[in-house]
Length: 402
Image 1: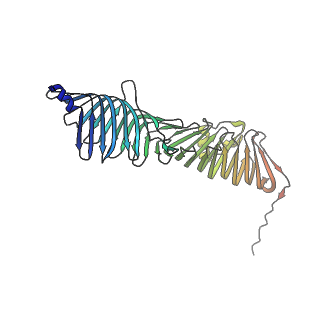
Image 2: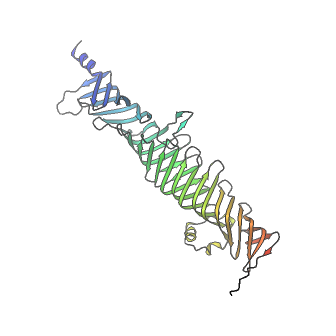
Image 3: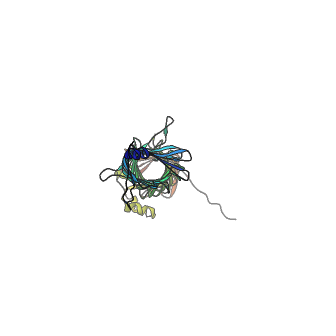
């Protein structure tokens, strides 16, 4: 065996131990560089690099080319064809493809970057819709500029990344990953999409082990292809059934309607938004869309100008269909249109007919008196209230003081 053959035999399988971390390098072609002062002292082609921590695999990378110092504390890898990275609960990234990668053994850090024209790609288990299906994990496609992952802390960072699968897609400039907690933080102002919703927020946090996505700050959800928009300061969204809960400064807008409330729950199966707590709704005739300037006026309690061609309805609970616009109000319903006023236990708004039908302990105000009736039908187009059924005048008798 000549000298060159000895070098290849020795270099074909290398192992380095740093603390409790093990690195294995396998390559059929290894060259030792003899130039003094050159950082790269080892080069290999068609190389496999494997890392282990505490007896468990931490990563495995197969690449076209790699180079390293003699102590292999820093390894530069080019043209990664396939890579696997393990999290706290098994594989969290697989089929990694990247133009460049650097492994820092002393800090247990893996860096991977895309090429000049192609992004870094992989299948990764960190998106809101990654959960389990029939006992098996679902991975999302990651496209990104770069990825950093600490194998000891099980935390990573993605720069300019997008995650997508058949059910869910999310984009963000920055993604902070914690595979031990199964969480991922998306910032700033990330955007997420499902087949029927578009979600934006100052920050989104994915609890991908629970199929849960939380939104913080300026949160906006567009439902059913943008027909309905909800804004709030906090969001909890299920990536399993696409239902959601929103609270803090609720602003609900739909063609011809604008509402404020304390809380909102959305049921995707029935295409229904349920507003609760101090619900106030403006209904415009002709299905006109309210302008932002008009919305601001409502929030400042300047409602008189808004009621020229519409209605103001207050209630404790409002259920609105995001499919056809019909709405049902419940609990202390009060309806005001110009000089007309009525109150009841329940009310139903018909989007096509542009009418509100009030039932249950119905009272209508006429010339300063409250009249009890069976039903009141309020018309947006006719701008009038119609009392249906017998009308009973309520007379209040004041007790004389002794």
